Image: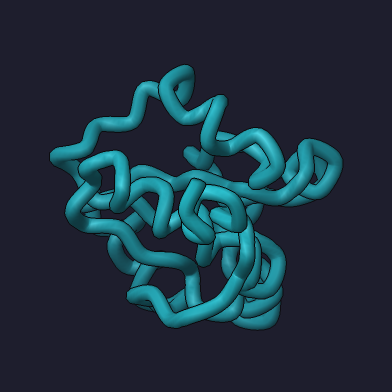
Length: 119
């Protein structure tokens, strides 16, 4: 087993990012990407971006098929502080998703910008 498979969940390295303002603009324009929130169910239930689906990073790889994401459409991975979303981006890329990034700064950046959430 390679280190990449064994330690897939480690949040190291850089991945493409989208700012909270840019993501909000995309969501408002109708060019909405698919949103995958990899925080815990409890975190997601307390506050999340409308339209996001939840799959905690601890089960993301095994849960991914049930999310029914379209690999031809952009995907944004979301977590609290842009840590857990790094491995989610890698897993999605390895699964053939071409346009994948993470929310820069995570939900903390979204909240700090005063952008809308669902509870």
